[in-house]
Amino acid sequence: MNRASQLIFPIALILLITTVNTSWAEPPPNPTDSDLYENTAGGRGTLTNNITGDFVGHSNTGFGSYALYSNIYGYENTAVGSGALTQNDNGYNNTAVGVGALQTNNTGYRSNTGNGAWALNSNVTGFYNTASGYFFAFNNNRGI
Figure (cartoon, one colour):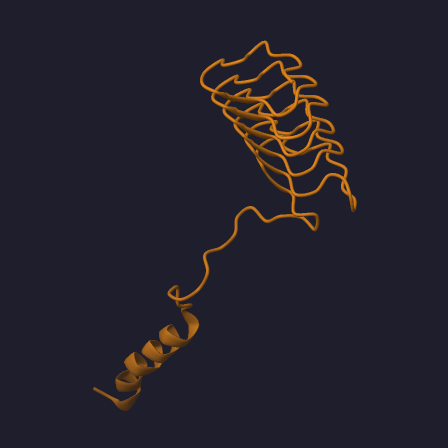
């Protein structure tokens, strides 16, 4: 065995060690980064029409196809599920979890919570409403 072949293995090992990134003790990658106004969106059409500013359109989180689609000035809303809070335009502090939850919430502002598919679906102007369950309070229009 000549000298050159004896050096190949140690050189290859050193190159491998120095070029491979370690994965321990590092934070995981963030696949869904927030914008400057703390809005986070995941899914087709989610937060598409959102207008951001100092007092509007901030701190919204939407995951699911067309979640918070019509949100224009609304803030501090959370929508998880396809079509959740789709027609919300200026409501705020609303939480919708489930397909179509709070879907037609338009100006229904202040702390509406819909958990379950189609929960509080027809809430338009109501506020401080809570509905949990499949189709629960589906036709609630104004609530309190």
